[in-house]
Amino acid sequence: MDLADAVEKTWSLNVNGDAVSVAANEDLSLLMALRQDLNLKGTRVGCAQGNCGACTVLLDGRPIQSCTTPISVVADRNIVTVEGLNRDGAPGRLQRLFLDEQAAQCGYCINGILMTVTGLLDRSPPADRREIVATLDERHLCRCGAQGRILRAIDRAMTGQPGSAS
Ligand code: FES
Ligand code: FES
Image 1 (tube, rainbow, N blue to C red):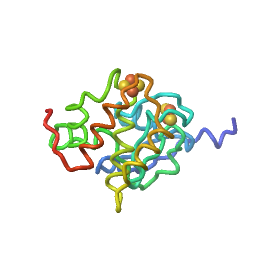
Image 2: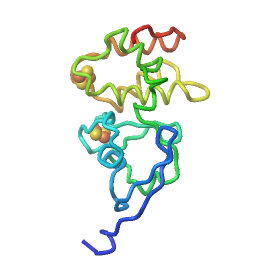
Image 3: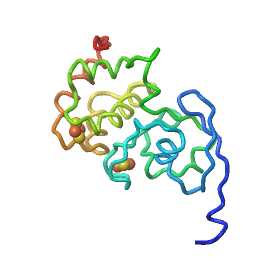
């Protein structure tokens, strides 16, 4: 390794509305920065190769895979993790709908799916059902077969229904 590669810099990020800084080599993945440096463990480690979607977060409102995104790319940009979906310390609306529909089995894939769906629905104009299904199909693995319940929760989100689970 070149000595220059090992030099840490301090990176400024905005995570869930908070200005934070991380001292790291420029190649550190956003996933590891979130989990190890910022103690935000809701962003999951799956394949770590950009294939499973478990590590998805929002970058300036768009879903990205944090395992293949170096911290140098996200400096001074806005990141939202699953923790940022909470409202007043409780699950946000989409999370409540997933809870209502029991839209998980092991749950490992769910935080990433929540972030992708949030990004697609909060977009202007929001994605339609076909795009959401195609995006989940392309970018997310759910090995438990919870897709039917996940789609029921998403359908309720698209029709504006409130979630009731606490
Ligand atoms: S852990 Fe990032 S895509 Fe699988
Ligand atoms: S609920 Fe287990 S991988 Fe999706």
